[in-house]
Image (cartoon, rainbow, N blue to C red; front, side, top):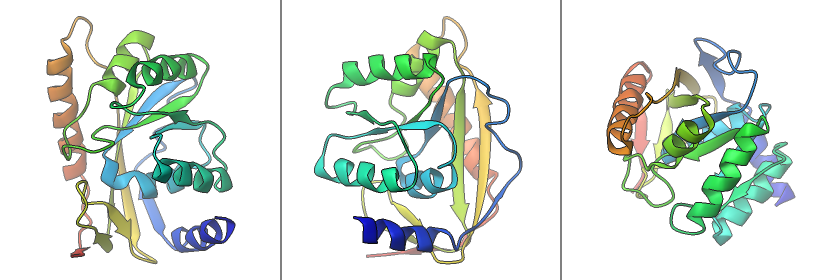
Length: 202
């Protein structure tokens, strides 16, 4: 894993990242970070110096991801998913946010449907009163895998454009309406990215 982590670190360090603002500069306490599952690799690399606690599944692949992220400097993980230990994940996420961590949700993980938000991030935001940082990434050139999430791996030396939005669900809003608003805001944010040039892999 050390060798793989080192090689992947070299690979990711070739990316040229642009962002309109430092979206974490407006947050001095805990928060929720939300993205689509397809963008998690580039976003975890770019934001590795923030106090982020990713939610990682209990699968073998999830354990490998934790090992990789430790080499990148990540110190806290919340293990589980909406399908396994979902209640425990929500409780631990709330505690982490209240302790100052930024808990990272893949909104449509762990198995989709693609780009359909699950309610976990919303529930933690509503229960803690803390905002959600919505993040999208778009690369000038990338490999798009034929997985359920259409996983995106930016090519070496690709330019990556990040967009973000700080959002808080309204009080007394239903979860279904909040999910609709969240998905709408993610699509709006995604459309602000101007880069394109993806290559689809079979």
